[in-house]
Length: 213
Image 1 (cartoon, helix red, strand yellow):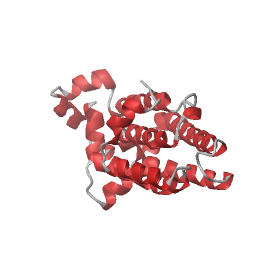
Image 2 (cartoon, one colour; image 1 turned 90 degrees about the horizontal axis):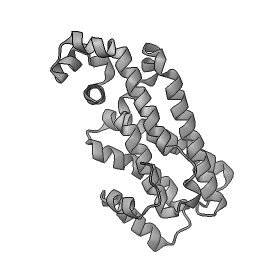
Image 3 (spheres, rainbow, N blue to C red; image 1 turned 120 degrees about the horizontal axis):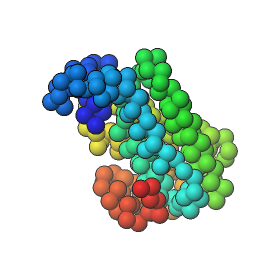
């Protein structure tokens, strides 16, 4: 995970195999023996990312989600993307440099869109989300964009730490979703206060039916 930390903090393009070897306190030759350079490292990290996302992008629990659970599920998605956020900086350059990651990246993005479409359609049909089909489709686009690109936006425009970046992404999504939830004003206010507390994850983890371990 040393390479992942360096890539996330400094960007893949600026981190060399020597940098990784120094951080690991091993020789560059020893690193090359195990991974054959950055190409193998990046490919291995993408496989890890794909496996991690596959655990979250399953539909069997979405039909039972209540309005209050949506925020926690979206947080899980943001958090998982954030762990591998270097993949979402200059993605066109990365796939050109490492063609071996193209298929996994496409699988992740396609599965994410499919999952969000299913989620919002399910909520809409159960009248948990007050939106028509067209609005639901636009919400999918918006949420997918925020999940995959907000960390890059924050790094360019502000100096938020990792935790604040994730909550900022969640707030961006919820400002569009919360007014459409079939909740009373008091329930919406409580959910908004929970989000703003930045401490809701522990409570939701024990109360939510979502378990993707």
